[in-house]
Image (cartoon, rainbow over all chains, first blue to last red; front, side, top):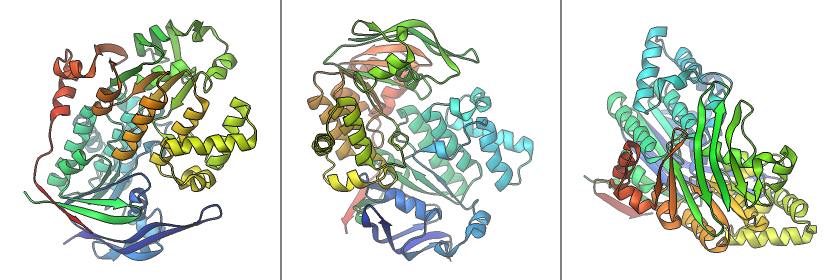
Length: 234
Length: 263
């Protein structure tokens, strides 16, 4: 059975100006496939660092991260590339993940061309369906990304990650700054993805309400440590 | 008073991003602005700052700051007022700072240039204001590059700069979006108590914050003001479909029972 297992992960940064900074202390988390986990914590508690480790943007100072039994901390660029369909991430600042000069459609389609075997017609259908799910007007698909608002860009980057139906999805503050209606659409999309494709989500958030809505477990972090855990009992 | 009168902004493609929008922000008041993403909130703020994208154009209207029509000023004069007279708290603090320069240098340079302070006075002022926004590790923050701080911390640095500059009007673009509850409450408290004499336009989706801070809230929908009033009123007697949906979602409670354990 698939799962993500984070074992004794530490992350220490060294910088000329700051000296040594311990961002994560002995983190242990297990997430079974089909379940959703929320990570809550104040600014600077290490939530985003953990997200970066999970998709290989950084390697931990020590510890292992097993993705379906394989230690991703040992993967090189080539191995990551071949596993991109397995795990996807959406970050707080979505401007870095989209090409501002290209249209919204071509940004999403590119991911589908690279990571799925859908033909052109199927790709178009999939993109249109997802646009409806997050209450985005189809007209926006022809608009260059730079002309979209912050909230529209955020929903588009989530839509791009979800379009390829990954096994695991890391979402770093995807609902912060969205209005209640867009937040509701995004959370419904995540709930459906979990039900339909058994996609597991790690949902990093400040909102307890959003965390409780889509996850089975909530982990609370403080100064790089896990300090509290909550389980949904019924 | 900062007064936006019948402002219309058009994109090259012909689409109106703002259509006859009128908003008044009196000194000493916090005015709320909410609306769906893409409704024109950020375009409105960009218009006030004179920082519209090159493919957008102001077609009609006026923006008066006290007795000055900002739209009649040269680009240089307009930019000169930003920071000094009108301050800004950004939505994405990561892009508001120069990633190559230390935070301390960026604050100090701003205070030295804009407030004509000496280096030591600028640093002292920076430390004093960082304290007010609950950034207690002042030396670490000042020595850090923007990439070494979290989004929430950068948001509070931006608020600290603003407190130091003390402009007459403040445009806050979803300032609490990247903050946890504790820091968000703290920032709201700073806005409410330290900036009592300013006119603040508070752009947010946070129902609690809009209720707590603002007497009057404008709701934008595809470039137009669709509703206006006290937040409680807007929630209890919504007039438009969007506001009705917004109001029902704001009342939705989380379901399920949770068991908690401390580690």
